[in-house]
Length: 90
Image 1 (cartoon, rainbow, N blue to C red):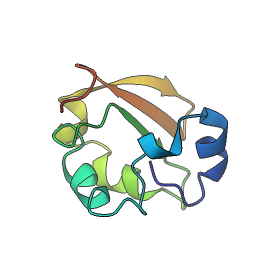
Image 2: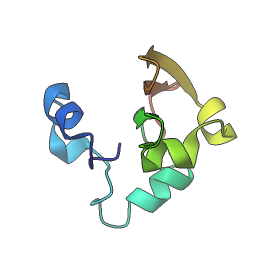
Image 3: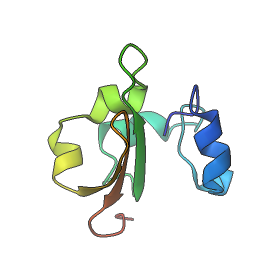
Image 4: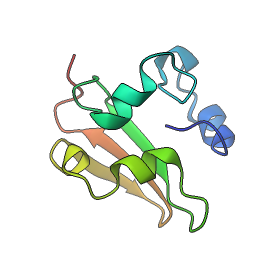
């Protein structure tokens, strides 16, 4: 997930910060955006607020990388959570 402008989600999710891949994750962020499944990403959070879409949405929305390996498990209309079909490759 992108942490910028998603700070409340980062905090409220109670996911240990060491388990998050975000734009500050050295050498992992770009790889995870390009191919989250190959990078072992289990959960994907994206924000699609019109005019304020995050980098995850811009990189993955409507792509085969997302559609082929992830199931939509939460849809709030402008915020989505996907989970890897196989629990994440590693």
